[in-house]
Length: 354
Image (cartoon, rainbow, N blue to C red; front, side, top):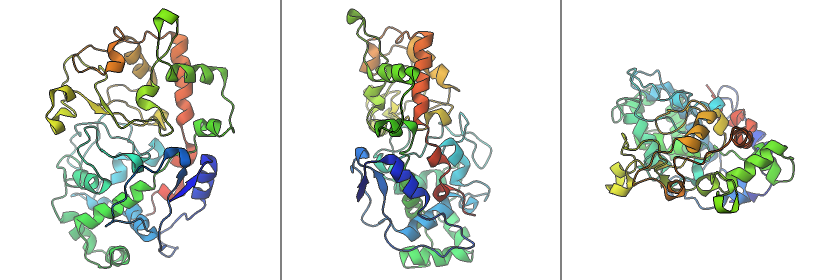
């Protein structure tokens, strides 16, 4: 793997690599080199049976925007994961092929290369496994086993492309998921103003500076220190930790969350900590999309944390919340907006190629 320290340089290089257009350009071929800042680290796994190739990423991008994957041939992965919204859809709960809402909010696909436990409850441990879930779920894409593969097999371009990627023109659900996983691993966001600040290329405003201090500090009333303790769960260069937490949304969780996977009582109402990258673009928030603005998210952490035996210990010491002032909330939101990466949401490599 190649490591880049300057995330701004990474984004510029990425944007010029190859803006593919299906109609005009030949299919790229050869190994695919992932470019990312050294600060992101190399702690990720690419399956030996699904190595990154340019042709595999190309096919995965086509499939990501392909409505033929759904039973009604009307919904694609991109329907619920829109690039302009950092690969979310702006809805509290997404709408599937039969007009029903999904159970949980559509998560951002930003920097999934480093995520080891996918979905809000962490039920899948690889992107290949994850891709098959919405494909076959009744309330999402609704395709029966083999149905999407059969639809693609009848087309002219796809059998040829699958042969280029997998050595055979036989299309299967597993091969579909492998190609999708290759494309999704390339969705790397690393050129926000926050990254530019870390590289010494952007100077924080006074409000952003105060917001960063609140974000990173734990409160200490006895020392008259104010803080939001946000970094405990959302710290580091990637702005998330591989953790599951009950963040006090309800005294009694209506969604068991991680507990449904582990069977452990202590996991009741716990959900995966999402990245804060591009957070200003991914409303509404929480696993059920209950908060439609960052202001309401901060109101929750400030005044409305609900106590329960499963509450995250980082929140348990705060009676009902951190009691942030209006000015502190404004500063925190100023800081959170630094995480927006305009090159990511406009990168032609990630756009609809059809």
